[in-house]
Amino acid sequence: MASYSINVNGEKRTVDVSPDTPLLWVLRDSLGLVGTKYGCGIAQCGACTVHLNGTAVRSCSLPISVVKEGKVTTIEGLSKEGDHPVQQAWMEVDVPQCGYCQAGQIMTATALLAKTPKPTDEQIETAMNGNICRCGTYHRVKEAIVLASAKINK
Image 1 (spheres, rainbow, N blue to C red):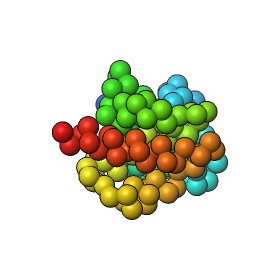
Image 2 (cartoon, rainbow, N blue to C red; image 1 turned 45 degrees about the vertical axis):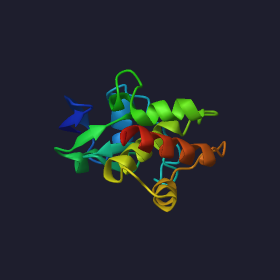
Image 3 (tube, helix red, strand yellow; image 1 turned 90 degrees about the vertical axis):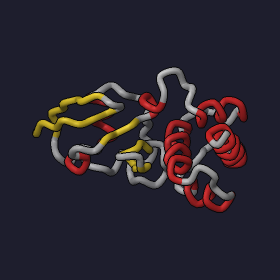
Image 4 (cartoon, rainbow, N blue to C red; image 1 turned 90 degrees about the horizontal axis):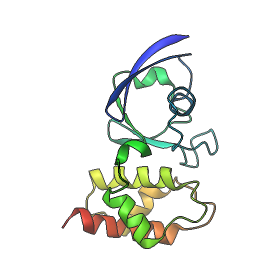
């Protein structure tokens, strides 16, 4: 066990965990932030996506020891009231079905729009390619990202 002081959603938090503990389990089990989901455990489905210094990362395979002084943002830290433009667009387009993948989808989409405010269809498809949706809402995900881009670029 080791003690790690990490910045999560703008707040310094200290956890005592093994250095190889995946960030996902630190967030869920140690900090009680359960919005980030466990999907596959091998960084292939995207359900566990969070931001590390603004970049979308798969928290299920990222050891806490790698986070260091980085800033972690989870779905809970994206906005207090669910009013981030991507979250608004998700609701307007009615993207969720079962909802399991949605936090990871939203976190990937927000990272994309932060770096590429007006993405092309190809850029959206490339960025979202690693996020699996069991319900097949890919068309609505893309539509919501286009809408969110328009909201951000008003």
